[in-house]
Image 1 (cartoon, one colour):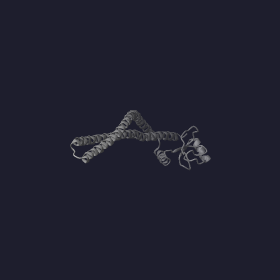
Image 2 (tube, one colour):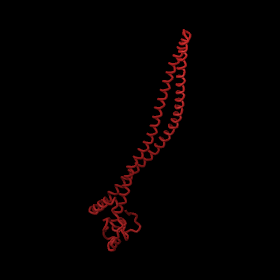
Image 3 (tube, helix red, strand yellow):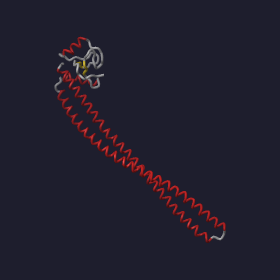
Image 4 (cartoon, one colour):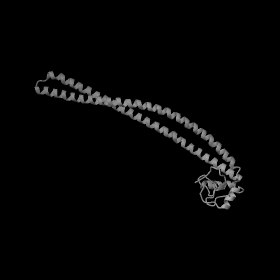
Amino acid sequence: MHPVIEKLIELQELETRIRHATGRLEQLPRQIAAMEEQLGATRSLLDHQAAELDRIAAERRQLEGEIQIIEERISKYRSQLSDVKTNEQYKALLHEIDFHGERIGKMEDEILVNMEKEEGLREERLLLEQRLQQESAQVAREKQAVQEEMEETRIELDRRQGEAGALIALIAPEVYGTYRKISTLRKGVALARAKENCQGCHVRIRPSVLGQVMAGKQIVHCDSCDRFLYWDPDASIESK
């Protein structure tokens, strides 16, 4: 194999790893954001439940206050019963007492319904608080793991970029310029393994061109996709 082609293959492998590391660095913060979003959703549920509990408690206090006022009114009516002069007045007071007594009964029923809702919400809230605690602990562990992976990936990226820079310095500028152009056009794959066909574009290689590739004495390009061709039955670099 031509020595320049060997360097280009090594460079392509390095750049593939660099792209992978770069993509991973872009992806990892999104993972953290997704974790935080899940926690935020649970916290929002807790906030909603807290607001609902406050609303129910305020409604209960209002009903209790109204009941107290009505009870005072009924007590006043009862005290007036002994002072009335006619049956009509007596019946009217009894009607008022019964009417307000029914109102109190309805309000007390509302209070019981609210108390049941409040009890159910408190039970749900307790479960939700436990869930939030578990999720927070899990997210903390996962964030730590992600942050450690990010640091390791940055170190790997720096190392790979340093290796790629050192390798580029060993390649003739005109060859590297051609490599860079093809790599850009071919989605990062500037080299293709040569068999009967170019393994990059799958176009058949002329026997004379294939012979030049196999000899490894000169740099040869595919007539169809312009990729650098190399002969290595055990090579792993291929493209679509």
